[in-house]
Length: 337
Ligand code: FAD
Ligand code: EPU
Image 1 (cartoon, protein in one colour):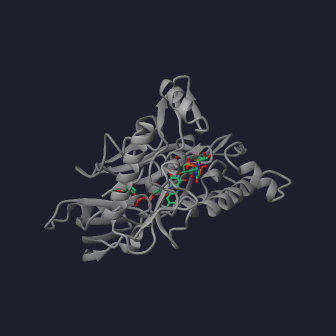
Image 2 (image 1 turned 45 degrees about the vertical axis):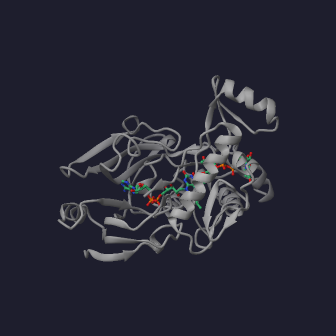
Image 3 (image 1 turned 135 degrees about the horizontal axis):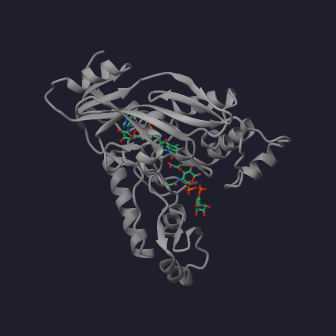
């Protein structure tokens, strides 16, 4: 276990932002993590890094970046209906999903191909195609940075919401997630109602529905829509889809009659941020190497050498124009560092 000084993070964030961290180290055991948390350096700021797919570095990092490489997948329990699978935080998310699909552990297929690692998945309750991890979450273990004690969190303790959890708000930067246990189904409950899944399954000429087929359909849809960070730097959706009150929706709808919308509950409506951004004329926008993706305007991109500041400034401009045109405040989903 080595602490490396002045380390480039360009290949450790999917935006491909070229910044340095004062110190960098990787840990693959809890003892190594504890030792690194105790290390006395010229700075006390310690940041836990997974796959770097939901962060935007806007400047050099004046601290110690700790790359989580805790590995392992274990079937820890089963009952009549479920498998309980414990996975360590440093496992790649899609590799874990693929492992579950191979073993016929059902429930994660709609979450195929999301970048990043298992440890960050409860941070913001990752979601796609009608499923969020809260739907299959059993518990997690996390190390409290101060005191180095290990705590168990149930789903209720995590206070999951749309791209939200206690780890993003109340306990921000206080815990290192060590492992997550998922409750997966023995008999699959297929969820094909969202987006273009059914259409894609038809296109694939699937005769018999399976978790393998759903996973492949999701992979096909995602690959056709979202830019691959290996080719174009990005961190997925930059903003959340905003929720507005039903009254606000009614007022806006009179002017913007074609505004797409989804009912959240009797009082609230969700509006796709991609549509709001497109209506403000940003789709396909490019200024230097910072831009707005041509197929999915909710995704901000780094074509080559954009700085984090340039991407951040672009996000500010987008926020302002959506606020001016629609009176809706967009909230960033990506963590700004
Ligand atoms: P990182 O970016 O490394 O970290 C994110 C945050 O979590 C940081 O604050 C970090 O400090 C913290 N963190 C990481 N690991 C730990 C840990 N072990 N303990 C405590 N804190 C930790 N997200 C979705 O929800 N749905 C999608 O469909 C989706 N699609 C995407 C598509 C693309 C092309 C890209 C690039 C991103 C997409 N994302 C999506 C966002 C991203 O994949 C997820 O947020 C993912 O969970 C981030 O994981 P990570 O390991 O890369 O986290
Ligand atoms: N739209 C446009 N113009 C476009 C593209 C989309 O107007 O160019 C509108 C359409 O009305 C479309 C709607 O936006 O129906 C929704 O688009 P899409 O299905 O692509 O999904 P999204 O709302 O943009 C969300 C998540 C994604 C997740 C997909 C699939 C958020 C912030 N984003 O995107 O998650 O993969 O649904 O479930 O909730 C991420 O979090 O990083 C992420 C990629």
